[in-house]
Image 1 (cartoon, rainbow over the protein chains, first blue to last red):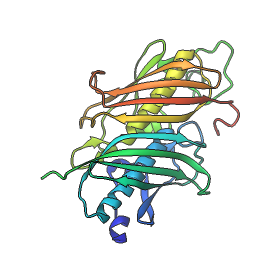
Image 2 (image 1 turned 90 degrees about the vertical axis):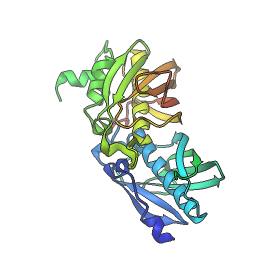
Image 3 (image 1 turned 30 degrees about the horizontal axis):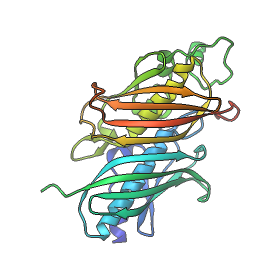
Amino acid sequence: MGQAVSEYHLPPYARSMGMEVDHVEDGAPVIAMDFATRVMGRPGFLHGGAIGGLLEMAAHAALRAELERQGSDSRIKPVNISIEYLRGGVQERTFARGEVIRAGRRVANVRVEAWQGDRSRLVASSWMNFLLAPPKT
Amino acid sequence: MSKDEKVAGVPNTSLPEGFVFDPERGARWFTRHGHTGFLGMEYHDHGEDWIELALPWREDLVGVEETGVLASGPIISLLDNATSMSVWTRQGTFNPQVTLDLRIDYVRAATPGKTVIARAECYQVRRSMAFVRGIAHEGDVTDPIAHTAGIFMLVSSEGWAKP
């Protein structure tokens, strides 16, 4: 099972942004993204949208892993996201991990956090809701 | 970077007296740099307190390989940029600011191959905060892809950017 999660397939957007699965922690993939010009906003800092994209990818990956554990192959559609930016993202590798709060029949709620060198000093914190739909037949 | 670009653009936070933020020139500067440049955002239009930026569809920005639907990450970036620039558009000047919070509702999936347009408005500026809202659409604002509401903190220029 852990195997399947670590082989989580990232979409083209994530790959072109340099995101990758760093490792799996308690069943949820930790997604990492290195600093580069392509993710920079104001000079020397991460762009808020790049942080948002990383958070969404981690939320999606955590939910996909949770659904796998439940034996569900539901399709996942993002409904909304709310992001708190807590401190500027500096020129370092950034990590994000999602925690599925609830995965029901139709809706899933996920909390996600992003950090850099020091896990206790979060760069951003967010919640995200997903709609679960039966797989297309 | 030419002297002209420095004035229209932004990272130089010590601005000349009487500086006026030109949304079109400012946006054209941004869309050539960093993440905004990487995504390929373009200036679209602006008014007194609003600005529109466009994001043409691109294969490497796709979120669902099977359908070709754009990932939502680039839409966050587009709305973040457009709402941020709407503050300077309303103020007519550039002030350093950082995103405090941003909420996005995804009303529907973007259409594969279509350009996404973000229309963003700054509806209030206080001493320390600017309040913004915006819509991402594909040409018809009554058929939106996403809605956003956010707040920017106005900060000191010291340490805002690292050259």
